[in-house]
Every structure is written in C-alpha cells, then in structure tokens.
Image (tube, rainbow, N blue to C red; front, side):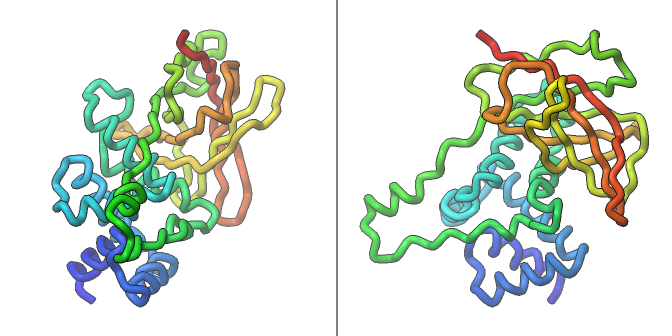
Length: 258
C-alpha cells in the first residue's frame, strides 16, 4: 500500500465507508505499528478540521455526522476544536491538530484505542425518510470551558485564582504547567482529589512540549463529576516498567457563575 492509499483508507474508515476487510486491516495496523497509528491520527485531524471549516462534500458531511459523531468521545473532540477555532483569545495554543490528537489519546491510554468504540449500524436503505432524518441528526456538541493551572511549586496554593465556569458548560478542559521534563515514553494520568485526599476522578493526560522547552499537560474532565469546591490535581507518570511517580500538584478552586 502506498502512503496515499493508506490515508484514503483511514479516512474511509473514519467515515464508516470502509468494508469489514478494510476496517479490520486498519485496526490491525494501528495496534501493531506506531507509524500506522500516527497516519490514522493525522487522517482524523484532517477530517475534523475539514468538517469544522465546512470543507467536506455533502456526502462526507452526512457520513461524518451520522457515523463519526455517533461516539460521545468524538463529539467532545469536535466540540473542542470548533470552540477554539472560533476564539482567538483562547488560553490554549489554538492548534487544531494538537487538539484532535489530544482527544484521540483520551482512549489510547491503557491499550484501549478509539477503535474500541463500537461502529454504529448503518441505517437500512428501506427506512422511511422521516426515520432516517431523525436517526441521522447529530446530538448537540458538549460545551467546553478551558482553564490553565500553575503547579503548586510555581505559585503557592493560597494565591491560586478560582476557576469560575458558566452553569451551562459540560466539560472542563485543564491545561497543567510543569517545569520538569517528562519521560518521552511514559504514560501520564491526572487524578483529581478533594483537599482531604478523596479521589473523585482520574483520566489520561496528554503531554506536549512548549516552544520554551517546558511540558504542558491537557485533560478534559466531565463537570458532572465535580461540584463547586477546592480540589488538588495530581500529575502522575507511569514508566515502561510500570513504576508510578508524581510529577506535579495543582490547586483547582472550582466555582460556578450565578
């Protein structure tokens, strides 16, 4: 297979156009070849960016909304990119390519790739137009609020500013700053605890290097799991041997707007 045909096959897979044989091949390649996974991630980046920019054909857009957006994780991914693409004042770096990859990593930690999401069944050709239209209508995209947290070692906990989120927001997108350089092949996770040490949420943390050499971790947290309170966010790193160590701690003073 040439590189062009692999990209085309990955795009067909993401749009639900691939045959069972093609789908199985894409999934086997992704699990067994890191370069193949990178190519698929790049194809997914391009597909989401084309959708947000309104550059898909009518048929591709219909398939994207019916097939790709059937997954809640994919809807979050698209919502983040759409929100930040339209906001030049975002506290994040505004890179749609990074955001798509970061969202893909939400399911990649622990060996469970986004391929684990069950492919939705296609609508039978005999379905009535009214039923087809009702099934194909994409659900509303989750609303995301982004916030940046400095490490406690950088600024004292008492100086941490509250994060005030609107009442109609679904997800909290956290950006964690850190001075230490993480291991390239390590797996990063974020744990959110109450000030008394009770764990309330944990999930995969995607890590990139800023232009100044510092590391930045990003994670999306469902606000349904948190109430207005003070929390401690812990950046954990798991190396290739399974050893876990703490990379940083952050104060999250979560508040809701009236």
